[in-house]
Amino acid sequence: MRNMKNILITGGSRGIGKAIALSLASPETTLYINYAGNTEKAEQTKQEIEEIGGRCVLVQADLQKENCAALIKQTVPEADILILNASLQYRKKWMDITIEEFDRQINCNLRSSLLLMQQYLPGMIKKGWGRVITIGSVQEAKPHPDMLVYSSSKAALTLMARSLALQVADTGVTINSVAPGVIDTDRNTDALSDPAYEAAVKAKIPMGYIGKPRDCAGIVTALCTDACQYITGQNIFADGGMSIR
Image (tube, rainbow, N blue to C red):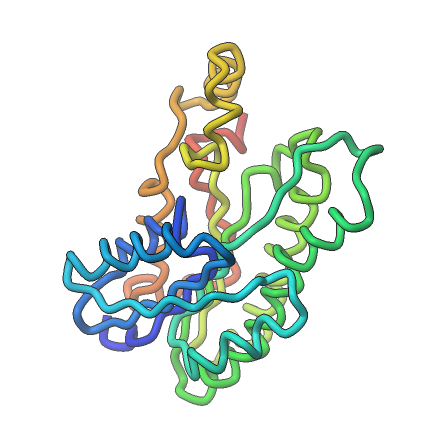
């Protein structure tokens, strides 16, 4: 934990990102929580982090924008740990996807991740220690028919992480991916409110239940520590076994 001084989490104000932030919070660590627009949720997350003794700085930036990484760098000059969690998805049939919707998802889910790694990886390499964790999706293995671009962007992000992990493997920096399954977050609330749909989803999960954000936070936290310093370039599914069925 000695090197975990500055942690940047994109999309860290809710859902999986929030659970990761709460898991990593400590008096010795400053958590930089990036969020796009919901200031109320961001402030609530900040308060919860501070209530358990953590330090938190909110960083508002829209990851769909080309200048997002440079803007974040103004508030977060260096990061020991970079957790690329933010994402955007549209549920639509493939024939109905617009160019604008395609660009928004690719820019948020993939391009911003490269831009942020370009900003923060050099500093990690110079110090000889760093952690980058990308948050993917079980859809890399089990693509949802109504989320073509989202699943494609997550698969590309994981491949990007693997490629970079190989390139920096001898620098003290590890880069890994965590691929959540179906997680009980506000993003899935509407869909899972349909009992028939919820039952169909659970039937695809060998463990038989829908995960909680904390089920992803544990493995992310472990990958940040020196206990996992010999792990790099890996994609770990936190999905109740969904990817192997």
